[in-house]
Length: 265
Ligand code: MG
Ligand code: MG
Image (cartoon, rainbow, N blue to C red; front, side):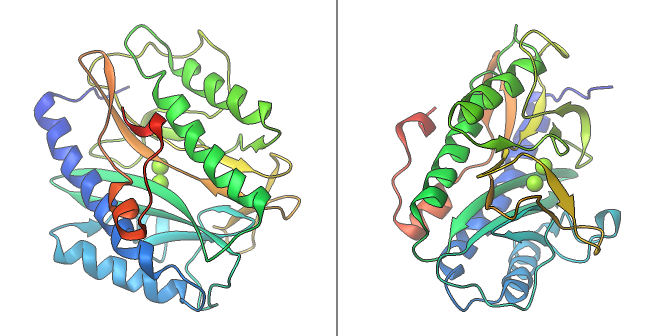
């Protein structure tokens, strides 16, 4: 059953989402060659607790850390390692916060120094595909319209869009109904209604959409070893339209990046 949120609940969720946003912004300038993911994870945990939240992922389903950190061919659910980041790597950072009895959950893929042209394009296009999906979150549409729009955009540019992992409803639980796939058919799935809050999170591969899992029981990586990107926002339906509760602005402020035109919604 989908748990639709009141305006008051959405405001509480915005605070949880914004603490994730600030955590990612705090990390952004530290994601450089030589940085140790496990140390960044500890900084994030401290930052979240100092700001009145709890790390949302720590201990969830038995996950050992506060952040999922997935470099290069890792798609999602990577465990922060002691291996230093290298020039030309990419690093997907997924962060969850529990605060005010609600979860925030979003993700950004960072370039570590200068990355190759194909990878740069992968990051830009995956981020844009997230907003292509968000634009479909209007009353009158269906959940399938979100995935269909993301899949059309992604496959037209020659990428593989991951099927096995999906976005989700968000609220007092990290994963609520409905599932929000990044592929699908228009006109399918539940109707989008006022008060829906979902996490939309395209996972896009430079090569095949196929994935495999490491023996650690967590890390998902691309089947062909090519790079993968992951961007995620928390989105509420307010007055029939999408309202993004999270923001990448703290990351942009830290890195001196201008938001794209399509982000100014
Ligand atoms: Mg996430
Ligand atoms: Mg999520």
